[in-house]
Length: 374
Image (cartoon, rainbow, N blue to C red; front, side):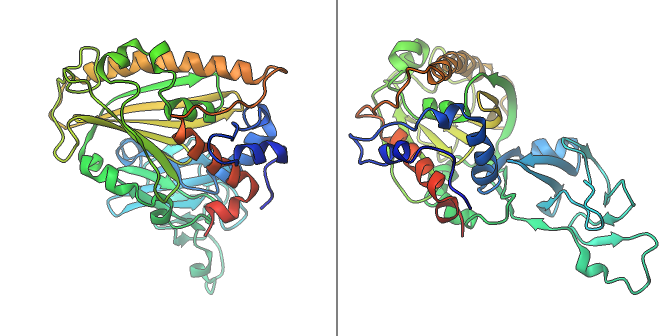
């Protein structure tokens, strides 16, 4: 694997000890060649979240997706989730066109009619000889996992095991039992900013007093702390103000408190590379990022609640306001990064999570296989 097309001195500066380091060089956010490299090495080469299993299952048992820059077909059945290269073993035709969804008992290549069971085994190869060794021509399977209801796929097949990728994260997420919760609302945004700008904004509240009055009314922006544990994730917690039951415009909850959840804190966690989890006493929110250009990112934001909750608007309205404040800030940052006068800036003392994020990226830019691989 080759290193990212970024200046070595810029990565050196990002990897200096905390307090003396700098942010990533501007090219990391503005150069299309860097995004092309990221799609192959950080998205296809790592564990990318494709969304909730229930969302996939609603639309069919076969889904053609692009993970990074690799075409993948995902099957969803009662037996679980599996992923395969979207490549027929005969002549390489796609089994489904990009974005395609269907409900069938088999994966069928539209070119010559070869078909495969949903576990990838070759089922039929029309007019091939009777002694054709069908078992040798099953689909190329790729690693896929269902983690608390989120589907993750490693499209290159070269990433470290998912458990190692998570490190110590599961102990912070499992008490909220998100696999038992129900999607009650989904918002989709297109943000005119690089995907990393969005992640960096999420992982610091240095900006909160200036642009988030609603958030600061229910949680002190300087509260909480960040975790530093093994795994390709980062994050921390913030405390609720004394009057607040949860993150909402008036601090009141109109939902159901989650058994096992911390009733006085909100946990903000980022699973590298593309999913951000916000764990509240009464709901879980997830942002899933998909870069569509170096300066444009699609963000799916969904809210999970106890199944008995009928009106999630108290949480959705709060975060829609907050999200839009963040998107405006991120888009301004993106414009600034494109200025010929931008130079990589320092980190504030409370931006330790940003340091963890930037150094993870800088190390992966230099040696993707050594950082993300087996």
